[in-house]
Amino acid sequence: METPAQPRLGLPYSARVLVVDNEEEYRQLYRILLEHWGYKPFVATGEGQALLENAVHTAQANRCQLALVDMRLLDNNDSDDLSGLELIPRLKPTQSIVVSAFGNHRSATISIKQKGAVSFVGKEEGADRLQEELTQAAARYCVGCRQLDILPADLGQQVNQRLFPGRDDVAEDEPAELLGRLFPEARRLSLERLDDPERQPSSRVPRPRSMVLLARPDDFQPVVVKLARAHKVKKEIDRYREYIENRLYGNFSPPLKNWDMLWAVGGMVYPFIGATSVETFTRYYAAASPSAIERGLEKFFKRTWSSLYAAPRGERRPNIFEAYCAVWDRDWFDQRLTKCPFILPPQGTSAQWQHLQVPNPLAWLSERLRYPADLPQTALAITHGDLHGDNMLVDDNGNIWVIDFERSGPGPVLQDFVELETDIITRLVNLPEEDFGSFYTLCWLVSQPTRLGEHDFPASIRHPQLSKAAQVIAALRRLARECTGEFDSYPYLWSMLLNVLFRISLLDAEAQQRSYQRAVMFGSILCHRLEHWGETWPPAEWPIPSLERQSSCSNTAHNTPYLTGKMS
Image 1 (tube, rainbow, N blue to C red):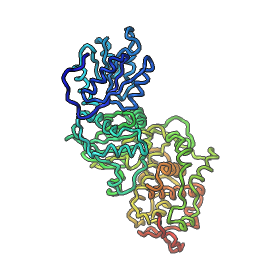
Image 2: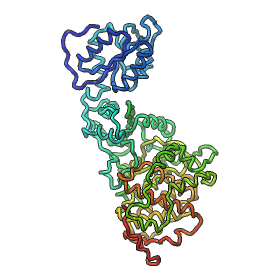
Image 3: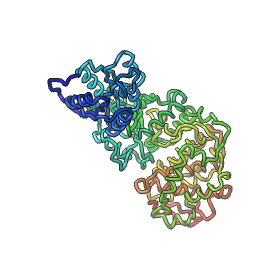
Image 4: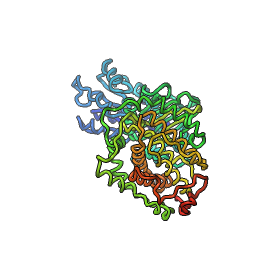
């Protein structure tokens, strides 16, 4: 292979190309050729196994999109040496072109079909053939080489800030490279964040390391894209295939259209399900009527997912804390939660909050964990595992479907119902930040019933947001009872307390102040309720709040004007 005599036009983008060859002469030749063609070469060094290990390190450290890999890297005279082909999977997501002087049809087939190489080029075929294969590979796997227009232009920066805050070891162009692989034929890709706080009336859901986008490739129909850290995407793909794919009812199981992972970032593409438009349940909740929301929830829980809730996972019924740790990993409690500052009482409500004399929920739970035999047990079923308003999408006909299956699998049977109710209470209910009284009223109401789904909340609620929340929550609990066969509110409220505490472990107390304070307040009230289960609710010293629309929950019989303070 000779160096071309005439200069070649450089590419508009310097794709990074790894060179792996055991002969120094070819290493330098490829380096010169690549620079001449407008690529940015990185050359693996060393001999034997050291060369293989250095190739893997160099590809990852420099985020090389492509690689030129010799087939025989250990011994040129050994016809059984296929070490270069064995290296190809280890270099992923770097895409490899095998270049060898010992090629034949068999080795080319192994390279491409079994090991995942892009192509096979014989060294005797010359520089023109190699450049042709590189150009084709670069156009497919290097987003800059095919001039894909991604809007907004700063999306890559947004993704890295969201997924990797404070880190500088993630390539600036990696999100764009990933989107290019997810949409290999697109020329223009318009993206809009479905979970953008500016588009939603309530605070951001605690989704610290992922992003959900509405993507419009060229003139085609929009699709939903989820971006997350690569190892999280791998876990989600595995769980989707094991628990979700072809297992949900009808056409409301989102097919996985495409997925890919690079070094740090991964992504999945889901098409719409029988719809021309979609919005998050978060936004839908704010605008839709309680009856419309109830109809959507009924179809989702009783049709789409009901068969999975009904399928018990063995005879074992672990205690509820153990069951949730199996879903979230014990680290959520041992590391994240125990390091939370737990701002108690919430700022601005000191006098009012102290009057209620509720416990610190972390201290309360820690004490109860000393006696695990006293914790309620739970049945297990296949649950979504992360059912909040930004993982639920609603189409223009009010049908609900879900994405984000990283925690899908065996879990507490009531988990999905409780998780959605917790999201409604702590985030979706639209109350002014200073309306401490109304939020107290909501906590008081939902903590009261002792039987699941058999207690309608008072019809006399005049506050529109509280009335709406009460109607939706009543429907959700009825569905929980009908779908799972569980009737007792005690394990339901226990499950809700653990969900609240898990949410607290993910929230930023300052950036997400409203959700954080609501969660701490609600968790404290739940602790008091569970500790005094079987006693009169609310306690005699607590006010029975007015159900009228007002910021103060003062009640003339109790003469409690202290409920007029600010939440934050």
